[in-house]
Structure formats: C-alpha cells, structure tokens
Image (cartoon, rainbow, N blue to C red; front, side):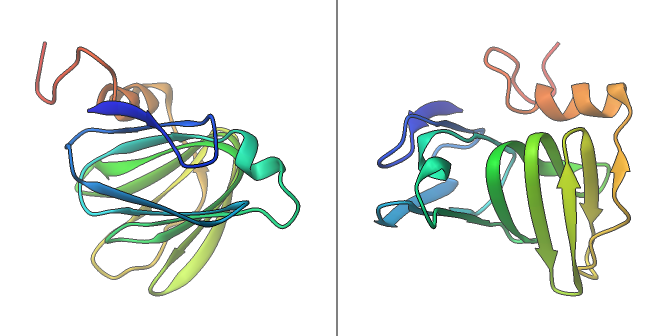
Length: 141
C-alpha cells in the first residue's frame, strides 16, 4: 500500500497492492481510476470543487461515482463492499444502482446487484479500514 496524489489534485489515494490501480486525469476536473484488485481508500479533494467535475472509479464489481467524498471499497464478507465515510457515493453494479451517504454501505456479489443500503456496524467499518491502514498488513496482528 502506498499513498500518492491523484493527478491535478491534492487528494490521497491508498491501495493495498502496488500496481492494482490505474489513475488517469483526462481533463481538468475529470479523474478516472480503475482498481484491478484489493481494497482502496479514496479521499476527495480539490478536483470535486471544479465546475462539472467528475470522479469515477471502476472495480471488477462496480462503477463508483464520488462527490466530495471519502470512500472505502474492497473485498469483505465474501463479497465486494463500498462504504461512504463522508459525502455521497453512487455505486452501479451490473444489475442496479444505489446511492450511499455518510456511514452507509452496500455489498455486491457475483450477481452484480448492489444490496440494500445500510449503516455498517462499527466492527465491520473497523475491519474495512484495517485493510488499507499503514502498518497493518492483511492477516497481521
């Protein structure tokens, strides 16, 4: 995992597996991130303040649109979870779209349908954050 700034922004993006993310800034106020595997944490910043700004993330399980957001996504509970830590997140799977607000999460499984939006319990939030925390390798104690 390594933090690095997104192009044209001061927002950090953390990935667990080096090389698992590809970041492209196509134009001012536009950012596309493809996450190939693993967990991530995106902390929104200046790019969302641009008129017409668009930040999109694509994972194997879903497309994620963010607005002034801190969002976690990754493998958890035998599926792929997305958690809005702040702001608003739109999650689009192969079979539907849900919108998350702060503290809310959804799960996606093989069928590609985002599950019902719920507030994640504190223990699940802690497990999610542990997957991207510095000095806390997966399975570490």
